[in-house]
Amino acid sequence: MTELLGVEAHLDSVLAEIGPLATLDLTLLEAHGCVLAEDVVAAFDLPPFANSAMDGYAVRVSDIATASPGTPVQLPVVGDIAAGTTTPYTVRDGLCVRIMTGAPMPPGANAVVPVEATDGGIATVEIRAAAEVGQHVRLAGEDAKAGQQVLAVGTHLGAAQIGLAAAAGRDRVVVRPRPRVVVLSTGSELVEPGQPISFGQIPDSNSTMLAAAAREAGAIAFRVGLVPDDPNVLISTLEDQLIRADLVLTSGGVSVGAFDVVKEAIGRLGNVRFVKVAMQPGMPQGAGMIGPERTPFFGLPGNPVSAYVSFEVFVRPAIRRMLGVEPIHRPVVRARLTDAVRSPSGRRSYLRGEISVREGTYAATPVGGPGSNLLATLARANCLIVVPEDVTELPAGAVVSVMLLERRQQ
Ligand code: AMP
Ligand code: MG
Image (cartoon, rainbow, N blue to C red; front, side):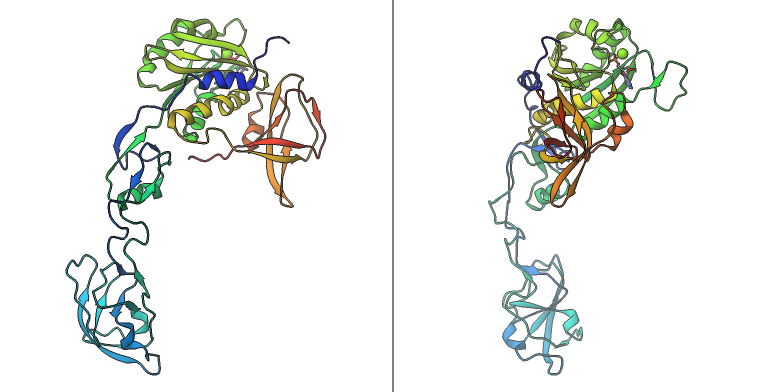
């Protein structure tokens, strides 16, 4: 086998052409799932004013120093402070006010006695416990100070981060948008999933799988579905789709078969290299730029496991780069093999594996054989065991690098 391109060499040439998408100013909800392109700074103290952490009574601790269940202290209640009150009472010696959670602490008071430690009185209250200064009081600025950075450039905006931006006084943020990834499958043998299949046909599993993988990487995925092995249909479909694509992903048709349409036709739309990469699965790869806006394009091999592994190794980092997040790669850990494995000489194997923790260290168990069509074993795998190019076999107990596939959206 000659002229195989190294995995890193191909990845580098792919990433060299891809940068973060232009920033957008979006409302907080529109920005959900995007990556911050600015620091978010608290517009005021969080919380903005000292307030009560409990429903109860705002007191001066010196007035209730002797209070206990057996020796309660009676205090007149001079008013009520609800959350939202903007003109609080001042609490003088020997007095208290009833206060609700989130209501501003009245000047003069220095603690809150929870209603559970009282008789709940309205005109006067019987207090049955002493208090420390500051008890059940949330201080102004204890979460963040005015002017303090609360979210940094590069932060992925999930629900909690959006909540914090709102609390800090923002309604919009500048973000990098989620890349729009158009996914289609090529192959005249393919049928829409869920439809009956005749002899020689199979459901198109790749477009759904790759659209889901693109989402897991942080993209917005548009699944176009399948196109037959007809160059003209492929080209016209891609021309229609380019308008909404930041990245185009196809599967199938990149090897050397008679009907490998992607390889045959894509050159009409732009500049795409077809290479053989020193890896298994996923040796044939197409990558480049297509259309008037030079949209990044990946032509992945059609075998579902090859397509999936190629996505993990090449496309996911590209999507992450467009998002502007770090790290762009999956986490890699060292793990001990529970079983022997084999790998072809001169190619880096990505073997489906199940990783677990045994006696405090990672253990990786290969699942299934090397066949790139074996989707059932891919679905069981939660990692890819990486066997280097120059290694052809490894015994049980050998320590290997393992790429973790946490299959959750992030
Ligand atoms: P190709 O890369 O087009 O030569 O396809 C290689 C193998 O993958 C063939 O067995 C195809 O039938 C299969 N294949 C291609 N595309 C898909 C797809 N979208 N879903 C499931 N299998 C596919
Ligand atoms: Mg095909």
